[in-house]
Image (cartoon, rainbow, N blue to C red; front, side):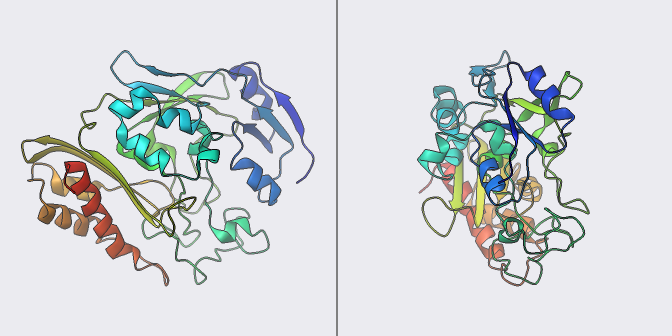
Length: 329
């Protein structure tokens, strides 16, 4: 890890100003991902600005009946907050499935959105990786790619996004509140926050350098009664998803009035399962219809040499998540 300048920001505007003109400047919240990246020399920092004194940790109800999550609220505090447990149990389930209790006690909501891929080639600076050195190639293509993408990949990158929190936020259609480098606030619909790799895999999201996440807004939604987060992984703790599914239903009797589905472990960003959703609206909430929707979503999957198993696994995960969201064993 190289030496860097370390300062404490006293306001969001001061934090933005301190980093905007520093190409190798970083914000520090919980540091659970950033410190790893610095230790492994995947990232090199000239300046780090500590955000922990900014007071952006409040979780509160919004006038429209939704909830605003402070960017600096800890993952554990967010998952266990009464407003989240009662109105957005899907988010609580997703957050409690992530990492370990120790990390959840340190990691922040804003930092969770900015997690970088856990692709082994990205973390190995001695191998070719277009994410940490554009133009060098993607070692995962033709390499060990069991954990990698089956949707939205490109010839430049096949890495997956690691967050469980973000998969639930995609299903809940959250909005990210940002302070721009000009000091003015702006909002980003969650679906537009993260990027597919395309020909710029080094860019994980659409934030400009120096922009600061201040909060994440959840809209008022009718899914509290029928939602479920399912995470399939190699071990029960501290493991990233092979496939995950965030499922939320609004039912009118046995008919599906609304549905939200998002998948993790399958793409460079949380993958909104739009084709499955379209196949379910207005249909009966039956296992047969769940299976047909899963088939529709996975029809366009493009597996690599080692991860074709994610296609049947993804189908089964969608069916199980929807079945549990409906309320059946």
